[in-house]
Image (cartoon, rainbow, N blue to C red; front, side, top):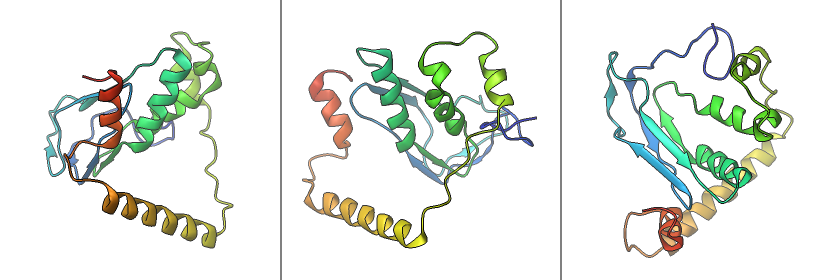
Length: 163
């Protein structure tokens, strides 16, 4: 059996458990239908589809890029998800070129996933993390407290792309 990213040992079965962290994506051309929340315990008999994420844009390529960005923002901690599988699909050349058929997923899962880069020196990773943390802190301190809506969601609403 394969897990949600195509590695052996797991399957596409639902993943019950406590949602320990939840960061939901938003922004122009992104819509999410979801009723779960951080701290919720997903029961064993719950429908395996906990969320529906939709990306729309004027072109297929733009929609794929928006969905990839949204999936990079999406964090669900405590349970297994298929976010990694969707990222893998959206980055696949055949999918991006619409060269797919009913056997596409089986062929994709038969291939080993691309290796994860591990050749970045630790000091570079630490510096990048520090810069990211500083930028997030600066944005948080500089952002006016108008609402709890994210900047991406606000931009999408201004563009009239997301209701």
